[in-house]
Amino acid sequence: MARHDREIVAALRAEVGALEPARPCDRRAELAGIGDVTARDPVVARIVHRLNRDARAAAEPPFGWDDAAEHCRTAYLRGRFLAAGSLSLANGRTHLEFVIPVVEAQRLARQLGDVGLPASWRLRRDRGVVTWKGQDVVGTFLRRIGAGPTLLEVEARQVARAMRGQMNRILNAESANLGRIVAAAGRQLAAIEALAADGRLTREPYAVRVVADARRETPEATLGELAERLGFHRSAVQRALDRMVRLASGGSDGTPLA
Image (cartoon, rainbow, N blue to C red; front, side, top):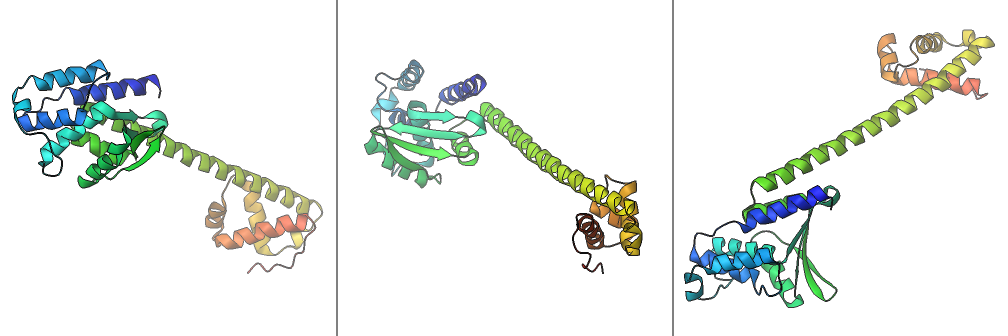
């Protein structure tokens, strides 16, 4: 990821980690999601210390996913994200994965499916990897666990990047189309001049001569613009121009114009 992307991801993690669960059961659930913090980063260790300050967290029964309330499940998933989640925003692609022991991967994938956020999982270097790819599902998960202003910044940047990409595609398509129009007009003008030079143009039907004059006068015009100017169907203009190009290159003049 670019430096700015890494900074945004760090800010988002800090924002989520700073949330203070109001209910003791949510504190307990978030601690369960974080799990064993041995050898983990100091930020997560501080979060665990803060959550453990509430003595009630240790006095209640342990967290259980299957019978947990929705808010407790959300707190648990927040803990999982803080302890094992990895978010990437590189090159405009949004990717979130949880790297956890293999025995936990299938269970976490099922739990995410339970809350309407199904994820795939696979093995990677003897670890389980639960994965989401795509802005929508990742954004839904991050909002669910409490991400706020930083996520809005991420989404705004992604929208802006998508709009730039769309504009670039439109401009590239327009440039390519303009190039084809210019190349075709060049061939048509060369054909008209060749037919005019040896007198063949004067022997062509009226419609062909009128189209030839219009093309000479407005070499940059599209077929539609020529047709509108002359009051012809676009297909009639196309056939007239194709006929002149074909004749100039030594082809047959037997194609009907009507």
